[in-house]
Length: 111
Length: 114
Image (cartoon, rainbow over all chains, first blue to last red; front, side, top):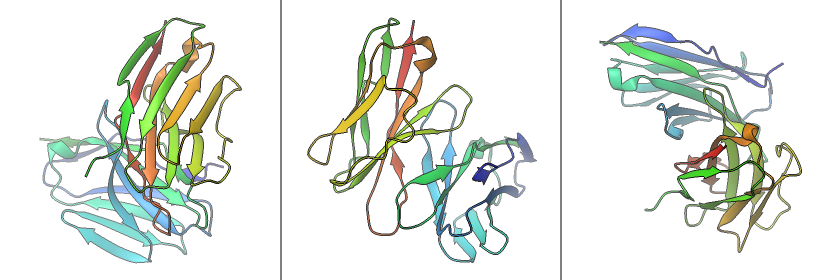
């Protein structure tokens, strides 16, 4: 069983719509959760992190965490073609700085 | 401030040769990580350094791979006797210690073994 699971996609959404990216994790003791964006040919870029249950908003991005369901999601409002990228979910189990990455979901925003 | 830097940005080498890849982390970041990403694939963890502690080498794929970190800052990843399957982008990341753990990545080194 993979420790961090994501649907590989591609997830296609029309411009202006809400894109919803999902991630599940297996370690119930996980404490820190991250979303990275990776454009083709570039390195991952941190866009959001969340530690507490609930929602965390930053501009058009909202991270949602549900520890009981071991589920973290990223919502992108008013999606733009420039949001087209692969989104990596990453999880840290606490007490140790190693982070486990999912394989990423490819998002395509259609103009 | 300056981000994570890596050099070279591209490296082409012949099969069997040794290569060294360099990573300079963000100043003040005590943790440093190396990952490998093959074309169209996810991140593969290689090795992790935290301060003066013994590194976590659990991700190194073979004994041809080694890494060191001098003075708690710059790190070098060495691949001996390179093979074609070593061709990938090698990414370095760093993070601060103390509870947050978010990692910041360098631009990567694209290694091509011919």
